Length: 622
Figure 1 (cartoon, rainbow, N blue to C red):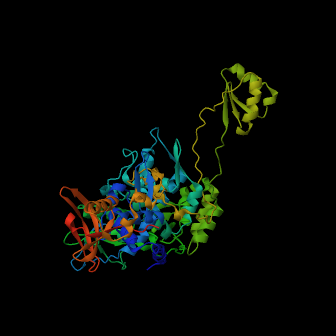
Figure 2 (figure 1 turned 90 degrees about the vertical axis):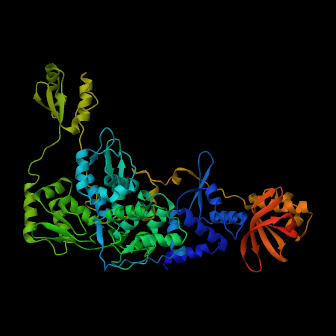
Figure 3 (figure 1 turned 120 degrees about the horizontal axis):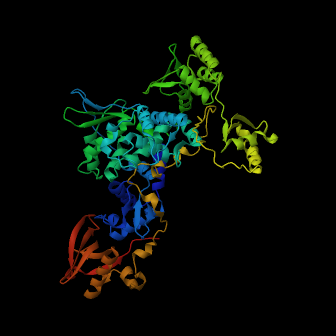
C-alpha cells in the first residue's frame, strides 16, 4: 500500500463502519459524478435505517468526503471530489484481472502515438515562432491548422469514438480541439481578440517539469475532460490505472468490466464499446496500445507507468537529464529523457524531421537564420549544442554554423515612417521649416521619411504649423512574435502539478459542471432529521413497555416518519424493526426486522396484533 493510501486510511478512521460503508456505496454508484438529494436518498440498506444513512451522509459532508453545490433555484448537487475518489478506489477495491494468452495471437488495432506532451511542445513552439492569428470568426487560419496537424501524432481515429463536443467544430478537427483545449485550460495559451498568445511564465513552469510529471498532470486532466461522463466509465478510466502492472502485459478489458460488475460498480450495457473508445484515445495520447484477441475481445497494454500518472504511486520522480546527439549529417537525434526546456530551444534552431519516442531534428542554414531572427545568436547556438549534446558538435557542423552566421544579417531592413502631405505646397512648407531639419528627409514632392524616434516631436511641430497629422498611423499593423525562454535554463514549478485543470474553461464541452455553481458549505443539523422530537413523550424513547394499541401504532408511524427503528418483542425475543411503509385499513406496517440474537435481517409485515412491548429508537447524533 502506498504512502498516499496509508494517509487516506488514517483520514477514514474518524468514520464509523456504517459511514465508510455508505461512502463506498456512493463511490460505487456515482464515482465522482454529481448526484441529487433524490438519487442518494434512493440508496437503501437492509441493515441500516434511513435515519442512520442520513446521519452517515451528514458526517461524510462534515469530514469533507462529500461536497455540495447549490443551483440558482436552490437545488443541491453532491459529489465526491476527484482528488479523494482516486485515493479511495485502491482502498475500497482490489482488482485482479485476467491476462490474455498470446499463444493464439493478438491483432493490433491501434499503436501508441509519440505522446501528448510532445504534441503540446510542437504546437507551442509553432505558436511562439509564427504566432496564431485568428479570423474574424475567432478561429485559427486554415493554413496554420494544416501545419499544426502535421506536427502532432494525435489523429482523428484516436478520438472519433468519444464524440467530443467543442466550440468551432466546423473549423477544428477533434485532435486540434483537444490540443487547444489543454493549452487553454492549463494556462499555456490565452486568447485575445485577434490571436492565441503563449503565456511565457506558465510555459516556463511547464517545460521545467519532467515527462513523468507532465504525463501525470495530463492524464488526470484528460480523464475528466474527454472521457464519457457516466459513473461506470469514470471508474473504469481510473481502475485500469490501478491494476497490478507487469511490464509488457496485456489487460483483458472484458475481464476488468466483469470484475467491476461483481464488485457492484456501475457498468452500462454498452460498456465494452465505451471502454474501447477510451483505449483508442489513450493510444493516441501516447500511453498504450490496443489489440483484440482471436475471440474479438479488446486488450490494452500500457507503454508508461500509469500508477505514477494518477498520483497513486511514487510522489516524486527525478528529472530526466538525457542528452541529444548531433550527427555529422546535421541531424540531431533526441531520445526520451531529454529535458523539455532543451527540446524547446532545439526547436527554434532546427527543423523537425521525425516526431516519435526518438525524435529527429535537422540543422539547416534557414533554421539557424530563424534562430538568429528570434534572438539566439551564433555563439548561443554553438554553446547550447555543445552543452546539451552527448558527444559535442562535429567540427564540420560547428564550422558550417559559424559560416552561416557570417552570411546572416549582413544587410537589414530598417523600419521607418512615411509622412504624406495632401499637396505639394504642404510639402514645400514642411521642407522650408528649419526646425524640421534632421527629423524628416524629403523623398518626393509630397512625401518624407521620418525616423520613428522623431515622430512625437515632429507631430508637435506640424500641429504648430496648422498641419496636424491624423493620430492613427496608416498601415502600421505588424506581426512580430518573440520566441520566449531562449536564455532560461530552469523555471519555478510553482503549484502547477496541484491544480485541477479539468475544471477550467477551455474549448471542449465536458460533462462536469459542479464548478459553475455556488459551493454549499451549510451542513444540516442532525436534529433536523427528527422534526418535532421535543414534543414526543420522553417515555417513548426511554422505556421498553406495552402501550395502548392506538399509542403503539402512533409510535410505529413516528418511526416510519423519521425513518428510524423501534425495539419490540417478536416471537418471544427482542428485535429491531425499521418500518418503511404504514397502511391504515387494516392497519399494518412493512419494513425490515432485525433478529438481535441471530443477527439475521428479513423483510417483515407487522400487524396491530404483533405489537406488544416496544420503544422508539433514535440513532446517536452527538
